[in-house]
Image (cartoon, rainbow, N blue to C red; front, side, top):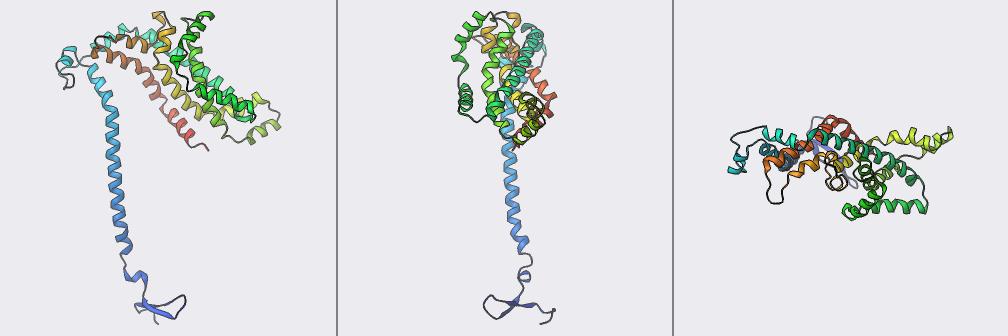
Amino acid sequence: MTSDTATSDTIAPDGPPVSGPRPADRHPDSRRTAKAPLGRRRRLTGGLGTVLLCLCTLLFVLPFLFTVVTSLRTAADVARSPLGIPHSLTLKNFADAFGQIHYGPSTLNTLLITGLSCVAITAIGSLAAYPLARITQHWSTAVYRLFILGTSVPVFVVVAPLYLLMRDLGLLDTYAGVVLIYTALNLPVAVFFYTSFIRTIPADLEEAASIDGCGAFRTFFTIILPLLRPVTSTLLTFVALQIWNDLLVPLVFLQDPGKRTVMVNAYSFIDPHTVQPTTLFPAALLGVLPLLVIFAFFQRQVVAGLSAGAVKS
């Protein structure tokens, strides 16, 4: 049969050659028509996903925008229409809150407590997690489970014993006492993070270091510690948010008003009988402003650490 004909001979599995049109010649546009509905479905699904994402983003952003707008309104405007369109904007609310909460000293107190607590948590947590991740004996498993059990203990249960302990140690109303409390409360979380991450690091690296004459501490500081940057970024993000926004510990253990944190001073405007949004909202925004600036400045490092920790295998 010549090549100019429209049919071809096809050999059946168990029969004589079958003459007929080639499969590609039967429906030349069949593949294109089959892909068309699939492409439309994908575009429709992508459009619905985009709409849902925008709605969720708007749902999370609206309370923040409402807080900012209310902070810029006058008290009379808010009283006249709390959810209405603002008729006048002013920065007087922020100026008043700035002076009333002693913003400068209280922010420095919060930065000092948060920074020292994060350093202590990461240092002690990583050192404690390294042997727990490498030693496979029964006592190490029991100690690790004891740390995990500590993550489920609420802080309200241990406030009274901690108060008596800090009083007996002479650490009440001191920065050192508050830092020790935050370190103890967040240490189980740090051990959990670091132990899970160190277990994914190949032990061959440590064996090679031991062959070169490195001891346990030198192996940790030269080999293991540099590899902990991703999980450290994740841990610091979680711990810093917890400490910065905490009200209970500084309110109970710091009795001197000059040593109070910015969030405690900000929420001191809450009256049990009435709440003035034009006073409370600016103070709350000023309280979280330094933390937002820090995370915006280190955004690349934080995101890179979270991403690296997520794909670690």
